[in-house]
Length: 133
Image (cartoon, rainbow, N blue to C red; front, side, top):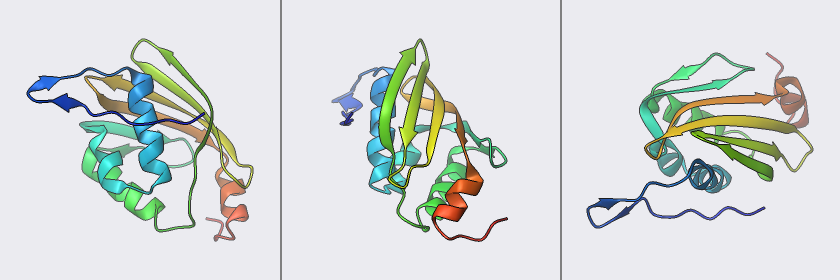
């Protein structure tokens, strides 16, 4: 499944996008290691909780997290499925080396306000020959 982003604004009119459309923009930004675009998808007070790590709170902290993440081996999110229910978009993904995971994104007014991700941190570290914490 490929995701292609759309603009959020036309002139002064705000276009409200579906959670799935916002998530597709997120995937595109993630796969391009585009820290600026990905961080702009988050609300100022957003929470990103990758369950293998402590929650990251606030857009600026989330931006720093992605700056650090993108400095490691190239990370690619291959979309297996995207589901949508109300304010939520759910992403089932895999990485080229076989790691699998899923993410839950709560989106309000075109901004991610909450994200929770489930993946195997030990497998990720081993696959990329990174030190085990």
